[in-house]
Each structure stands twice: as C-alpha cells, then as structure tokens.
Image (cartoon, rainbow, N blue to C red; front, side, top):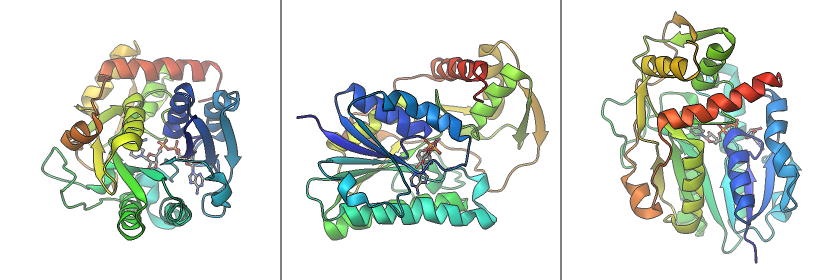
Length: 319
Ligand SMILES: NC(=O)c1ccc[n+]([C@@H]2O[C@H](COP(=O)([O-])OP(=O)(O)OC[C@H]3O[C@@H](n4cnc5c(N)ncnc54)[C@H](O)[C@@H]3O)[C@@H](O)[C@H]2O)c1
C-alpha cells in the first residue's frame, strides 16, 4: 500500500519540491498551506499547479493554527513540516507576531494533534539560523545555539517543541537544520534569487555589507533527499545539519552568477543589516552517518538550475 504523507507549507519553495518528489516516488500526499502573502501568491499557485494535476495529491488551503488537522492526518505516516514565516531581516518589530503565529504556534498545534497518533513521524524544517553569529565553523549540532535574529529564535523554539513531544509523548520527531537552500522556485526575498534577477534584467541588487559574508549553499534536491532519509531512518528526537558543503562569500557568488548568466549583476553596496550573520558552514557528519546523507549537487551546477527556472518565470512575467 502507498505511504501517505502530509506536507505543510506545500505551496512554498521547499514544500512543493518535496511534495513533487514524494508523488513521483509513489506516495500519497496531503498538502496544506495558508498561502501567506509574504511573497507573490502567483508563484505559490505556480508551485502548486503540477501537484494539483496528480491523482494522489489532496490540497487543503488552510492555516495550521486554526485548521481541523486530525481528519487530515488519517492514514498519514509522516508529516514533513515545512510551513513557516521565513526571512531573517523582516522578523524585527511588529512583524514578529507573524513569526510567533506561523513558526511557534503552528508547530505547537501540529504537534498537539500528532501526539496521540501511533506510528506517526514528524520531520521538522529547522534552520542554520539557530546557531547565530559564530566565530568557529563548521557548526555542529552540539554547539550552543545562540540565534542572531528573532526568526532564528522562533525556529529554535519550534525545534525544542519537537524534542519535547518526543521526550514527553513518544512522538517521533526529527529536526533538520537547513543551510541556505537554493534551486528552482527559490523565494524571491532570498539573495541568490535577487542577484539572478539583477543579472537577467539589470535591476539593482543592494548588497548589504562588504561581500565577505560566507554561506553554505544547499541545493533543494539535497534538502528533499535529507527529508525522505529522515523519515525513513532519522533517530527520534535528533537534530541534523543539512548543508551542501558549498561555502562561498557573496563577492564570489556575484562574480560566479554574472559569469553563468552572461551578464553581471547591478550591485549597489549598502551597510550591513541587523540579523545577518558573518558565516555559515555545516558539519554534516551526523547526517552522513545516520541518514546516509551526501549532497549531490555542486554550486555551479545548482546555480544553473535556478538561472534556467528564473528565465522561464521572467518570460511569463511571474517574477
Ligand atoms: N529556504 C531556505 O534557505 C531555508 C533555510 C533554512 C530553513 N528553511 C525552512 O524551510 C521551510 C520552507 O522554507 P521555504 O524557503 O520553502 O519558504 P516558503 O515561504 O517558500 O514556504 C513556506 C510556506 O509555508 C506557508 N505557511 C506559513 N505559515 C503557515 C501557516 N500558519 N499555515 C499554513 N501554511 C503556512 C506559506 O504560505 C509558504 O507557502 C521553512 O520552515 C523555513 O523556515 C528554509
């Protein structure tokens, strides 16, 4: 019999890519998303379109905080919890309420509903932002997390909630700390998306800081593979780093994207932003050992997949 999964945040960048892979692999998928307006909802509908064509996909437009989740979880063996209010810089000030709602309250509601269901596993999309602005890399799961942004605080709170439900109720949860994810469907607020847009259209790209900030970039297909491996063989209650091993600084990224897109970005240099960290780099030893994780997409190969997708979206005036 086909395995049945729930994917939360299914209209988003990672959730929609994961749901497609599950459907291709013979899973039945219940996808839920409230279609928040953090970025253009037309892009989310575009992400959903191929899923809606699939007979094994059930679509639910609703908010995790208020939805009646129990009936949706009938027959589900794995919840891939991708829904969140993403974005570091927007998480200060009045916007923080959204982060509490979408990242903490939504996760608590989901876990409360899941806790009484036997044989159910929750794979939670955590973030490298839980580590904060560290001096020493690679970041290891046992390092003391000290988030550098309100967003990071909410992602860490939800990660702790997952572990609590494992300890107290025996609900199997596995948290994956993603390191900057890229590839087709990447969110329009993310730097790489905005740099490619600048290369392809000539619009300005504001570079915050001096370009020496370094990120470990992870292709979305590797994130998807880690999710499926975590569902199959992650240790309940565990946290795993999922990085791509592609650490580059922003100046190198700008040069590389300009070369691959055959046109340099139109960079406007600005001061650093609150919440941004100087570097990220994952130690992936635990994910390799327990999940058999091995990132398969190199930086340039992965960048080309995103450039090609953005060219198609631009032609259709979707970005
Ligand atoms: N993209 C990255 O580089 C990155 C890095 C680290 C962690 N993450 C995490 O991965 C997950 C997916 O990120 P993404 O980049 O695909 O973001 P995304 O914004 O494209 O997708 C998230 C989706 O969740 C939905 N959502 C938000 N709150 C909801 C709620 N209360 N109920 C139902 N749906 C809700 C949104 O409408 C959106 O479609 C998030 O949890 C994010 O924190 C992403």
